[in-house]
Length: 450
Image (cartoon, rainbow, N blue to C red; front, top):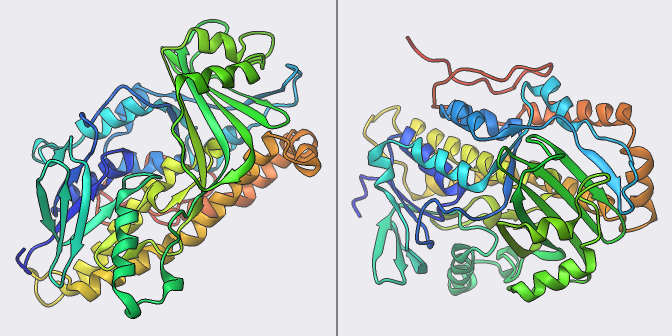
Protein backbone atom coordinates (compact mmCIF):
# COMPACT_ATOMS: atom_id res chain seq x y z
CA UNK A 1 0.00 0.00 0.00
CA UNK A 2 1.52 3.31 -1.05
CA UNK A 3 1.79 5.84 1.80
CA UNK A 4 0.52 8.47 -0.64
CA UNK A 5 -2.93 6.95 -0.96
CA UNK A 6 -6.02 6.37 1.16
CA UNK A 7 -8.41 3.43 0.98
CA UNK A 8 -11.08 2.39 3.45
CA UNK A 9 -12.03 -1.27 3.89
CA UNK A 10 -15.67 -1.21 5.04
CA UNK A 11 -16.80 -4.51 6.54
CA UNK A 12 -20.58 -4.92 6.49
CA UNK A 13 -22.92 -3.96 3.67
CA UNK A 14 -26.02 -3.06 5.67
CA UNK A 15 -27.52 0.45 5.91
CA UNK A 16 -24.54 1.76 7.89
CA UNK A 17 -21.99 0.23 5.52
CA UNK A 18 -23.74 1.57 2.44
CA UNK A 19 -24.03 5.02 4.03
CA UNK A 20 -20.25 4.81 4.53
CA UNK A 21 -19.93 4.00 0.81
CA UNK A 22 -21.84 7.19 0.00
CA UNK A 23 -19.69 9.22 2.40
CA UNK A 24 -16.44 7.95 0.89
CA UNK A 25 -17.69 8.26 -2.70
CA UNK A 26 -18.72 11.89 -2.10
CA UNK A 27 -15.27 12.58 -0.63
CA UNK A 28 -13.57 11.05 -3.70
CA UNK A 29 -11.79 8.51 -1.46
CA UNK A 30 -11.16 4.93 -2.50
CA UNK A 31 -12.96 2.15 -0.68
CA UNK A 32 -14.34 -1.36 -0.86
CA UNK A 33 -17.35 -2.79 1.02
CA UNK A 34 -17.15 -6.45 2.05
CA UNK A 35 -20.52 -8.12 2.75
CA UNK A 36 -20.82 -11.73 3.94
CA UNK A 37 -24.29 -12.28 2.41
CA UNK A 38 -24.76 -13.62 -1.09
CA UNK A 39 -26.41 -10.40 -2.30
CA UNK A 40 -25.94 -6.78 -1.36
CA UNK A 41 -29.73 -6.29 -1.33
CA UNK A 42 -31.87 -9.14 -0.01
CA UNK A 43 -35.59 -9.35 0.64
CA UNK A 44 -35.13 -10.12 4.31
CA UNK A 45 -35.37 -8.45 7.68
CA UNK A 46 -37.82 -6.35 9.60
CA UNK A 47 -38.96 -2.78 8.99
CA UNK A 48 -36.95 0.23 10.11
CA UNK A 49 -38.02 3.66 11.30
CA UNK A 50 -36.20 6.64 9.83
CA UNK A 51 -36.27 9.63 12.18
CA UNK A 52 -35.65 13.22 11.03
CA UNK A 53 -31.96 12.96 12.00
CA UNK A 54 -31.51 10.05 9.60
CA UNK A 55 -33.85 11.35 6.91
CA UNK A 56 -31.96 14.65 6.82
CA UNK A 57 -28.69 12.85 6.02
CA UNK A 58 -30.36 10.76 3.32
CA UNK A 59 -31.88 13.93 1.91
CA UNK A 60 -28.45 15.55 1.79
CA UNK A 61 -27.32 12.57 -0.31
CA UNK A 62 -30.21 13.17 -2.74
CA UNK A 63 -32.13 10.06 -1.69
CA UNK A 64 -35.18 11.59 -0.02
CA UNK A 65 -37.56 11.47 -3.03
CA UNK A 66 -36.96 7.75 -3.44
CA UNK A 67 -37.21 7.15 0.32
CA UNK A 68 -40.56 8.94 0.39
CA UNK A 69 -41.86 6.85 -2.52
CA UNK A 70 -41.18 3.53 -0.74
CA UNK A 71 -41.96 4.47 2.87
CA UNK A 72 -44.92 5.68 4.90
CA UNK A 73 -45.03 8.66 7.29
CA UNK A 74 -46.20 8.09 10.86
CA UNK A 75 -47.86 10.73 13.00
CA UNK A 76 -48.88 8.88 16.15
CA UNK A 77 -48.86 5.60 18.06
CA UNK A 78 -52.14 4.03 19.12
CA UNK A 79 -51.58 2.29 22.47
CA UNK A 80 -53.54 -0.54 24.07
CA UNK A 81 -52.90 -2.96 26.90
CA UNK A 82 -52.90 -6.76 26.78
CA UNK A 83 -56.66 -6.76 27.17
CA UNK A 84 -57.15 -4.43 24.20
CA UNK A 85 -58.02 -1.42 26.36
CA UNK A 86 -57.02 2.03 25.09
CA UNK A 87 -54.21 3.48 27.27
CA UNK A 88 -53.76 6.73 25.34
CA UNK A 89 -52.12 7.65 22.05
CA UNK A 90 -48.65 9.11 21.87
CA UNK A 91 -47.85 11.99 19.52
CA UNK A 92 -44.06 11.84 19.57
CA UNK A 93 -44.02 11.65 15.77
CA UNK A 94 -46.29 14.68 15.38
CA UNK A 95 -43.93 16.66 17.60
CA UNK A 96 -40.97 15.48 15.50
CA UNK A 97 -42.72 17.05 12.52
CA UNK A 98 -43.42 20.31 14.38
CA UNK A 99 -39.94 20.60 15.86
CA UNK A 100 -37.74 19.24 13.06
CA UNK A 101 -39.77 19.41 9.87
CA UNK A 102 -40.51 15.76 9.09
CA UNK A 103 -42.58 12.84 10.29
CA UNK A 104 -40.63 9.66 10.95
CA UNK A 105 -41.10 7.14 8.14
CA UNK A 106 -41.38 3.35 8.24
CA UNK A 107 -39.48 1.52 5.52
CA UNK A 108 -38.56 -2.09 4.89
CA UNK A 109 -34.90 -2.94 5.27
CA UNK A 110 -34.96 -4.17 1.65
CA UNK A 111 -36.28 -0.85 0.31
CA UNK A 112 -33.78 1.19 2.32
CA UNK A 113 -30.94 -1.03 1.10
CA UNK A 114 -32.13 -0.81 -2.51
CA UNK A 115 -32.32 2.98 -2.28
CA UNK A 116 -28.83 3.27 -0.81
CA UNK A 117 -27.43 0.86 -3.40
CA UNK A 118 -29.08 2.44 -6.43
CA UNK A 119 -28.14 5.94 -5.26
CA UNK A 120 -24.44 5.19 -5.67
CA UNK A 121 -22.76 5.91 -9.00
CA UNK A 122 -21.81 2.80 -11.06
CA UNK A 123 -18.13 3.07 -10.20
CA UNK A 124 -19.01 3.01 -6.48
CA UNK A 125 -21.46 0.12 -6.89
CA UNK A 126 -18.60 -1.88 -8.41
CA UNK A 127 -16.81 -1.63 -5.05
CA UNK A 128 -19.64 -3.42 -3.18
CA UNK A 129 -18.59 -7.06 -2.88
CA UNK A 130 -20.98 -9.77 -1.60
CA UNK A 131 -19.94 -13.27 -0.47
CA UNK A 132 -17.02 -11.81 1.47
CA UNK A 133 -16.99 -13.32 4.95
CA UNK A 134 -14.15 -11.75 6.91
CA UNK A 135 -11.99 -14.21 8.84
CA UNK A 136 -8.91 -12.20 9.82
CA UNK A 137 -7.30 -8.77 9.75
CA UNK A 138 -3.93 -7.25 10.41
CA UNK A 139 -2.58 -3.76 10.92
CA UNK A 140 0.85 -2.33 10.25
CA UNK A 141 2.73 0.96 10.15
CA UNK A 142 1.45 1.83 6.68
CA UNK A 143 -1.94 0.13 6.43
CA UNK A 144 -4.30 -2.77 7.03
CA UNK A 145 -5.19 -6.07 5.40
CA UNK A 146 -8.47 -7.96 5.63
CA UNK A 147 -8.69 -11.67 4.76
CA UNK A 148 -11.90 -13.41 3.67
CA UNK A 149 -13.06 -17.03 3.87
CA UNK A 150 -12.75 -17.45 0.09
CA UNK A 151 -9.02 -16.77 0.30
CA UNK A 152 -9.11 -13.22 -1.03
CA UNK A 153 -7.52 -10.33 0.84
CA UNK A 154 -7.88 -6.55 0.64
CA UNK A 155 -5.39 -3.92 1.71
CA UNK A 156 -6.08 -0.33 2.66
CA UNK A 157 -5.44 2.49 5.09
CA UNK A 158 -8.24 1.90 7.62
CA UNK A 159 -10.90 -0.67 8.45
CA UNK A 160 -14.44 0.49 9.22
CA UNK A 161 -16.37 -2.19 11.10
CA UNK A 162 -20.03 -1.71 10.18
CA UNK A 163 -20.88 -5.38 10.57
CA UNK A 164 -23.56 -5.21 13.23
CA UNK A 165 -24.13 -6.41 16.78
CA UNK A 166 -22.22 -9.66 16.23
CA UNK A 167 -19.29 -7.83 14.64
CA UNK A 168 -16.37 -9.96 13.51
CA UNK A 169 -14.28 -6.81 13.18
CA UNK A 170 -14.97 -5.93 16.82
CA UNK A 171 -13.81 -9.39 17.93
CA UNK A 172 -10.66 -9.24 15.79
CA UNK A 173 -9.94 -5.69 16.97
CA UNK A 174 -10.05 -6.87 20.58
CA UNK A 175 -7.77 -9.82 19.83
CA UNK A 176 -5.27 -7.52 18.13
CA UNK A 177 -5.35 -5.12 21.09
CA UNK A 178 -4.73 -7.96 23.56
CA UNK A 179 -1.77 -9.20 21.51
CA UNK A 180 0.02 -5.86 21.85
CA UNK A 181 0.79 -6.76 25.47
CA UNK A 182 1.91 -4.19 28.00
CA UNK A 183 1.63 -1.26 25.59
CA UNK A 184 -2.10 -1.20 26.25
CA UNK A 185 -3.79 -1.19 29.62
CA UNK A 186 -6.12 -4.15 29.84
CA UNK A 187 -8.77 -1.87 31.35
CA UNK A 188 -8.85 0.06 28.06
CA UNK A 189 -9.72 -3.06 26.06
CA UNK A 190 -13.35 -3.88 25.37
CA UNK A 191 -15.05 -6.80 27.07
CA UNK A 192 -15.24 -10.02 25.09
CA UNK A 193 -19.05 -9.94 25.34
CA UNK A 194 -19.88 -6.24 25.69
CA UNK A 195 -23.65 -6.40 25.22
CA UNK A 196 -26.27 -7.56 27.72
CA UNK A 197 -29.55 -9.14 26.60
CA UNK A 198 -32.65 -8.60 28.75
CA UNK A 199 -35.24 -8.98 25.98
CA UNK A 200 -35.74 -11.30 23.04
CA UNK A 201 -37.84 -10.37 20.03
CA UNK A 202 -39.87 -11.99 17.32
CA UNK A 203 -40.73 -10.04 14.19
CA UNK A 204 -43.49 -11.00 11.77
CA UNK A 205 -44.16 -9.58 8.31
CA UNK A 206 -47.66 -10.04 6.90
CA UNK A 207 -49.88 -8.45 4.21
CA UNK A 208 -51.40 -5.06 5.07
CA UNK A 209 -55.15 -5.66 5.12
CA UNK A 210 -58.10 -3.71 6.54
CA UNK A 211 -58.60 -2.36 9.12
CA UNK A 212 -54.81 -1.79 9.11
CA UNK A 213 -53.69 0.83 6.59
CA UNK A 214 -50.32 2.20 5.47
CA UNK A 215 -48.79 4.54 8.05
CA UNK A 216 -50.56 2.97 11.01
CA UNK A 217 -48.43 2.55 14.12
CA UNK A 218 -49.67 0.78 17.21
CA UNK A 219 -48.26 -0.58 20.46
CA UNK A 220 -49.56 -3.18 22.88
CA UNK A 221 -48.21 -2.84 26.43
CA UNK A 222 -48.27 -5.07 29.48
CA UNK A 223 -46.32 -7.26 31.88
CA UNK A 224 -43.22 -8.84 30.33
CA UNK A 225 -44.25 -8.34 26.70
CA UNK A 226 -44.86 -5.46 24.33
CA UNK A 227 -45.32 -5.19 20.59
CA UNK A 228 -45.03 -2.51 17.95
CA UNK A 229 -46.91 -2.48 14.64
CA UNK A 230 -45.58 -0.56 11.63
CA UNK A 231 -47.81 -0.69 8.55
CA UNK A 232 -46.50 -0.16 5.03
CA UNK A 233 -48.33 0.03 1.70
CA UNK A 234 -48.14 -3.70 0.93
CA UNK A 235 -46.88 -5.35 4.09
CA UNK A 236 -46.87 -4.63 7.80
CA UNK A 237 -44.43 -5.74 10.50
CA UNK A 238 -44.88 -6.39 14.19
CA UNK A 239 -41.97 -6.56 16.59
CA UNK A 240 -42.80 -8.41 19.80
CA UNK A 241 -40.39 -7.87 22.70
CA UNK A 242 -40.40 -10.35 25.58
CA UNK A 243 -38.60 -9.76 28.86
CA UNK A 244 -36.40 -12.77 29.62
CA UNK A 245 -36.35 -14.53 32.98
CA UNK A 246 -32.65 -13.72 33.33
CA UNK A 247 -30.36 -11.35 31.48
CA UNK A 248 -27.49 -12.92 29.57
CA UNK A 249 -24.41 -12.05 27.53
CA UNK A 250 -24.57 -15.31 25.59
CA UNK A 251 -25.76 -15.39 22.01
CA UNK A 252 -28.40 -17.78 20.71
CA UNK A 253 -29.86 -18.85 17.38
CA UNK A 254 -33.61 -19.41 17.37
CA UNK A 255 -35.49 -21.98 15.30
CA UNK A 256 -39.03 -22.18 13.95
CA UNK A 257 -39.85 -24.36 16.96
CA UNK A 258 -38.80 -21.44 19.18
CA UNK A 259 -41.08 -19.15 17.15
CA UNK A 260 -44.02 -21.50 17.60
CA UNK A 261 -43.46 -21.70 21.36
CA UNK A 262 -43.26 -17.90 21.46
CA UNK A 263 -46.63 -17.68 19.68
CA UNK A 264 -48.08 -20.19 22.14
CA UNK A 265 -47.13 -17.83 24.98
CA UNK A 266 -48.17 -14.54 23.41
CA UNK A 267 -50.34 -15.32 20.39
CA UNK A 268 -53.50 -14.11 22.14
CA UNK A 269 -52.28 -10.53 22.47
CA UNK A 270 -54.03 -7.98 20.26
CA UNK A 271 -52.06 -6.20 17.54
CA UNK A 272 -54.75 -3.55 17.17
CA UNK A 273 -57.80 -2.69 19.22
CA UNK A 274 -60.69 -5.06 18.54
CA UNK A 275 -58.91 -6.93 15.75
CA UNK A 276 -55.91 -8.99 14.74
CA UNK A 277 -53.85 -10.97 17.26
CA UNK A 278 -50.21 -12.02 17.15
CA UNK A 279 -51.37 -15.53 16.21
CA UNK A 280 -53.38 -14.14 13.28
CA UNK A 281 -50.35 -12.23 12.02
CA UNK A 282 -48.07 -15.25 12.39
CA UNK A 283 -50.53 -17.52 10.59
CA UNK A 284 -50.58 -15.12 7.62
CA UNK A 285 -46.85 -14.32 7.74
CA UNK A 286 -44.68 -13.87 4.69
CA UNK A 287 -41.54 -13.72 6.83
CA UNK A 288 -40.68 -14.10 10.50
CA UNK A 289 -37.67 -14.43 12.76
CA UNK A 290 -36.43 -14.33 16.34
CA UNK A 291 -33.41 -12.53 17.76
CA UNK A 292 -31.99 -11.40 21.07
CA UNK A 293 -32.14 -7.65 21.73
CA UNK A 294 -28.66 -6.81 22.91
CA UNK A 295 -27.98 -3.56 24.74
CA UNK A 296 -24.75 -1.77 25.47
CA UNK A 297 -22.05 0.63 24.36
CA UNK A 298 -18.36 -0.09 23.90
CA UNK A 299 -15.84 1.94 25.86
CA UNK A 300 -13.41 1.89 22.92
CA UNK A 301 -14.72 2.35 19.36
CA UNK A 302 -11.33 2.13 17.70
CA UNK A 303 -7.89 0.61 18.02
CA UNK A 304 -4.96 1.35 15.76
CA UNK A 305 -6.34 1.70 12.20
CA UNK A 306 -9.66 -0.03 13.01
CA UNK A 307 -12.84 1.88 13.85
CA UNK A 308 -16.40 0.71 14.56
CA UNK A 309 -19.76 2.27 13.69
CA UNK A 310 -23.43 1.50 14.29
CA UNK A 311 -24.45 -1.69 16.09
CA UNK A 312 -20.84 -2.87 16.12
CA UNK A 313 -20.11 -0.08 18.64
CA UNK A 314 -23.45 0.32 20.40
CA UNK A 315 -26.73 -1.58 20.47
CA UNK A 316 -30.22 -0.37 21.49
CA UNK A 317 -33.55 -2.05 21.91
CA UNK A 318 -35.79 -1.06 18.97
CA UNK A 319 -38.49 0.69 21.01
CA UNK A 320 -37.47 4.23 20.00
CA UNK A 321 -36.40 3.38 16.45
CA UNK A 322 -33.04 5.03 17.11
CA UNK A 323 -30.58 2.24 16.27
CA UNK A 324 -30.31 2.56 12.48
CA UNK A 325 -30.50 6.36 12.65
CA UNK A 326 -27.62 6.54 15.09
CA UNK A 327 -25.59 4.26 12.84
CA UNK A 328 -26.16 6.65 9.94
CA UNK A 329 -25.12 9.61 12.10
CA UNK A 330 -22.02 7.69 13.24
CA UNK A 331 -20.92 7.58 9.61
CA UNK A 332 -21.52 11.33 9.30
CA UNK A 333 -19.45 12.11 12.40
CA UNK A 334 -16.64 9.76 11.36
CA UNK A 335 -16.56 11.15 7.81
CA UNK A 336 -16.46 14.72 9.12
CA UNK A 337 -13.49 13.97 11.38
CA UNK A 338 -11.60 12.38 8.48
CA UNK A 339 -12.54 15.42 6.38
CA UNK A 340 -10.98 17.65 9.05
CA UNK A 341 -7.80 15.56 8.96
CA UNK A 342 -7.54 15.87 5.17
CA UNK A 343 -8.37 19.58 5.27
CA UNK A 344 -5.66 20.29 7.84
CA UNK A 345 -2.84 18.46 6.02
CA UNK A 346 -3.75 19.94 2.66
CA UNK A 347 -3.41 23.56 3.75
CA UNK A 348 0.20 23.50 2.57
CA UNK A 349 0.11 20.52 0.19
CA UNK A 350 -3.11 19.86 -1.78
CA UNK A 351 -2.00 16.29 -2.52
CA UNK A 352 -1.09 15.28 1.05
CA UNK A 353 -2.72 12.47 3.03
CA UNK A 354 -3.15 12.26 6.82
CA UNK A 355 -0.54 10.14 8.58
CA UNK A 356 -1.35 7.42 11.10
CA UNK A 357 -1.34 9.72 14.13
CA UNK A 358 -3.75 12.11 12.42
CA UNK A 359 -6.07 9.24 11.49
CA UNK A 360 -6.07 7.91 15.04
CA UNK A 361 -6.79 11.41 16.35
CA UNK A 362 -9.77 11.58 13.98
CA UNK A 363 -11.03 8.25 15.33
CA UNK A 364 -10.78 9.51 18.92
CA UNK A 365 -12.55 12.77 18.07
CA UNK A 366 -15.31 10.77 16.36
CA UNK A 367 -15.99 8.75 19.50
CA UNK A 368 -15.92 11.85 21.69
CA UNK A 369 -18.37 13.56 19.34
CA UNK A 370 -20.84 10.68 19.48
CA UNK A 371 -20.43 8.96 22.86
CA UNK A 372 -22.68 11.03 25.13
CA UNK A 373 -25.47 11.27 22.53
CA UNK A 374 -25.38 7.51 21.98
CA UNK A 375 -25.29 6.87 25.72
CA UNK A 376 -28.43 8.98 26.17
CA UNK A 377 -30.11 7.20 23.26
CA UNK A 378 -29.31 3.83 24.78
CA UNK A 379 -30.86 4.88 28.10
CA UNK A 380 -33.99 6.26 26.40
CA UNK A 381 -34.55 3.07 24.42
CA UNK A 382 -34.04 0.91 27.50
CA UNK A 383 -36.47 3.03 29.52
CA UNK A 384 -39.05 2.88 26.72
CA UNK A 385 -38.89 -0.91 26.56
CA UNK A 386 -39.01 -1.19 30.35
CA UNK A 387 -42.07 1.06 30.50
CA UNK A 388 -43.88 -0.81 27.73
CA UNK A 389 -43.26 -4.19 29.42
CA UNK A 390 -44.26 -2.82 32.83
CA UNK A 391 -41.01 -4.20 34.24
CA UNK A 392 -41.80 -2.78 37.68
CA UNK A 393 -44.44 -0.68 39.45
CA UNK A 394 -42.70 2.58 38.57
CA UNK A 395 -42.47 1.76 34.87
CA UNK A 396 -46.12 0.69 34.80
CA UNK A 397 -47.23 3.92 36.49
CA UNK A 398 -45.16 6.06 34.10
CA UNK A 399 -46.48 4.19 31.08
CA UNK A 400 -50.15 4.41 32.07
CA UNK A 401 -50.35 7.78 33.79
CA UNK A 402 -47.43 9.94 32.58
CA UNK A 403 -46.63 8.98 28.99
CA UNK A 404 -50.35 8.86 28.21
CA UNK A 405 -50.66 12.63 28.75
CA UNK A 406 -50.06 14.49 25.49
CA UNK A 407 -49.14 17.70 27.30
CA UNK A 408 -46.26 15.87 28.94
CA UNK A 409 -45.32 14.23 25.63
CA UNK A 410 -45.00 17.68 24.10
CA UNK A 411 -42.99 18.93 27.09
CA UNK A 412 -40.49 16.08 26.83
CA UNK A 413 -40.29 16.43 23.04
CA UNK A 414 -39.54 20.14 23.27
CA UNK A 415 -36.99 19.55 26.02
CA UNK A 416 -35.13 17.03 23.85
CA UNK A 417 -35.47 19.00 20.59
CA UNK A 418 -32.33 21.18 21.02
CA UNK A 419 -30.23 18.04 21.40
CA UNK A 420 -31.65 16.52 18.22
CA UNK A 421 -31.15 19.84 16.43
CA UNK A 422 -27.41 19.56 17.09
CA UNK A 423 -27.16 16.32 15.07
CA UNK A 424 -24.47 16.72 12.40
CA UNK A 425 -24.68 16.40 8.63
CA UNK A 426 -21.84 15.92 6.15
CA UNK A 427 -19.73 19.09 6.18
CA UNK A 428 -18.43 18.55 2.64
CA UNK A 429 -21.61 17.45 0.79
CA UNK A 430 -23.68 20.12 -0.91
CA UNK A 431 -27.45 19.93 -0.73
CA UNK A 432 -30.66 21.72 0.13
CA UNK A 433 -32.32 21.94 3.52
CA UNK A 434 -35.60 20.07 3.15
CA UNK A 435 -36.61 19.86 6.80
CA UNK A 436 -37.50 23.02 8.66
CA UNK A 437 -39.21 23.03 12.04
CA UNK A 438 -39.50 25.18 15.14
CA UNK A 439 -35.97 24.31 16.23
CA UNK A 440 -33.29 25.36 13.71
CA UNK A 441 -30.54 22.88 12.92
CA UNK A 442 -27.22 23.80 14.54
CA UNK A 443 -25.28 22.41 11.57
CA UNK A 444 -26.70 23.70 8.28
CA UNK A 445 -26.34 21.73 5.07
CA UNK A 446 -23.68 23.16 2.79
CA UNK A 447 -25.43 25.14 0.07
CA UNK A 448 -25.09 24.27 -3.58
CA UNK A 449 -22.61 26.54 -5.34
CA UNK A 450 -24.10 27.76 -8.61
